[in-house]
Image (cartoon, helix red, strand yellow):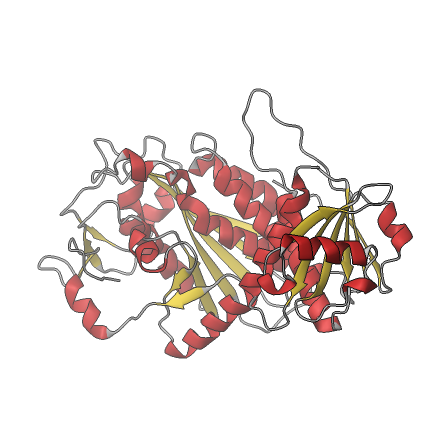
Length: 438
């Protein structure tokens, strides 16, 4: 679950051929246009092979070959466009790193040639992020698991980062934590076991914890959350709050991170078919992203407090499971008419968001695998985003473009609320039509 970070060495000067000859795996980063390949070690031979293969550096794709030195160094080379979006740069970086993975290297060399410092920094960050993701071991339950390779060192030439890639490493740790948790099978990552893993992590990082279990949620009137949880045979559901406080006293307002943590989603009484139920152990990914973000901010020693609120439950079928036409009361006093039990995410998050908002944070960011309608609209290439502050829309789009995690906004106009009017409760949980609802 923890990332093992290799030693990172940096040399601001250009890569000498002698240094290349002692490495079995190397990644070259050069300008996408007008690159002087002759300046690279074995550059004339690489240029000939690129020409023979009809490959251009501005294609956005990597080129891999073994150079004729005594080591037979495998080199992957990519052209860096200073104007390329982060998503395209990260895609190129992933390809550059993938060209070496089958060899399970213990060391990888990264060399920049002819890049401006800003472009070199950006490219090295992308490649390092790809390396740290590719060389992280995910859960493996095979009887004869493949022995994972251990990358010991990354040696960078042609650029030296002033901060030592601190942010890239922190982001990688958070990203890998989220990936690991999401890959765990549902019989392993139950809400109870998930909480134990997180509480162990909290002790390591010094986070304060508070767990609102079934009994406490009943006392607080969290009927929306409890409606989903009541179908589970184990009473291990609840809302886990984690608190990071900077070591230096801060007057800054808190950031609240909310995460949907449905450890398995059967759809409930409105049962999913097998095709759509498969993979529903990943329905807790929003909580894993919130947790990973908290970890990254802790690693970076953020100068503001951060709360993470994780809604941990399962959406089961059974004699006690909630059903269509039930009316439940949420913690804010609003009554909800249940329309479809597979719309459980908004139920557990309604109460979680309410409790978080009562603490009056500066900003609330909610992560959730909420609805197939979003995938239908955007595919899996982008994430959908909603906000009750219209001025944040361009900020969200820009943040997505800058990070490579592209997002696109969905509207929240008042007239959409008409579809959620109920004859018996304050609001419908969702609609049953193939129409939009929020």
